[in-house]
Amino acid sequence: MTLSSPSPPPPDHEVFTVSQLSTAIQDVLEGSFPFIHVRGEISGFLRARSGHVYFSLKDSQSVLEVVCWKNTADKLTFTEGAEIIASGRLTSYGARSRYQLVLMRLTLAGQGDLMAMLEARRQKLLAEGLFDAARKRPLPAFPTRVGIVTSPDGAVFHDIVHRLTERFPLHVLLCPTLVQGEDAPRQIVAALQTLARLDPEKRPDVVILARGGGSFEDLLAFSDEAVVRAVAAMPMPIVSAVGHETDTTLCDFAADVRAPTPTAAAEIITPVRDDLLRGLEHTQKHLFLILRRFLDAATQRVDRLGFVLMAQQGRLALIRQNLDHREVHLHRIMDTFFKRQTQRLSDLTHLLEACSHQSILRRGYAAVQSPQNQWIHSVYDAQSLDSATIHFADGVWRVRAADDDQRGGPRPVP
Image (cartoon, rainbow, N blue to C red; front, side):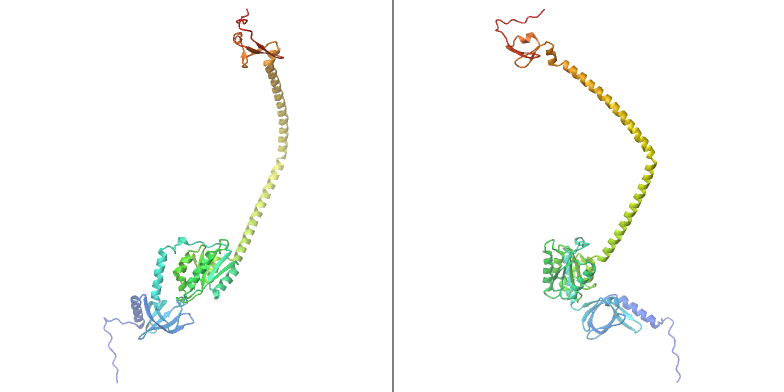
């Protein structure tokens, strides 16, 4: 039997290679479904040694292959048989001629309504200003007391205390509380308010609100509205350290600082004691070096000044001798001046004494004074006086006028 060769395709028909066709199909899939949400059940879960995750997403009729790369898979929790909403981009795997979903986000089915409710709550509190950046307070540089609000039974509290002890030992105040369940929000609020009501001298300098990782439902207590408001009302800075780095709660927005993990919160609020000691030692050495250089420079300057003073010693001696001569000359001038002034003062004293009232009286003169203590300068002024006082050098003589008929008028002396 002879096989005839097939006729070649018409020249106007394009011929694809397998790789070209796979690439074209991939372009169509990725262009048509850049980001989609698919609901289904996890089946055949496998985590490869590389860290990548592979499983099937199925419903009652169909199956969709899913791949999740390591950097995303490390942040997600997978449970065989769980019903989820897988979000990602659709692509094709040409080596097997099949299409698959590249998973970028995973949500448990039924969480959609709950997430919508939490988003509405977030928008409400955001509008009230509880998440404003202006409300955020800086953490103290060197805290002495830290308050921890968490469960005392889990590893979180012990991990935080261990990390604090390693880095910067300080006084720890534990306010125990449930961290999940129906009663958890009430207990968390009560623990925060207990710390807030402490006397200022007993309050912690900073507070850590913490719990370990968990599912979406496990962390719901930290998105409760009462808890968020209690966090925002704290009088001291507060660090939210709830879950892992990929987990987000509403407390993260209300707190002053968000830590990716509880252990990271202990690192955020404290410096490293050993680093501080090394820094102080370095500063001490640096200051000592500066002081040593300063003293050396001062010593050299003093030595130079000593040489200058020694060189000027002869000149200083001449200056000192000249000053001595000037001092002697100045004393002579001052003595002459004071003697002249003393003599002049004595002459003025004698002159004043010669012109004084008593000096004139001693020369034989007398002074007449009226009863009103007025000096009488004229015989005409004495005519109307009934009495008078006559002052002599050795005393006074009081006289009374004669009767009117015996008085004579003033008689001018020729």
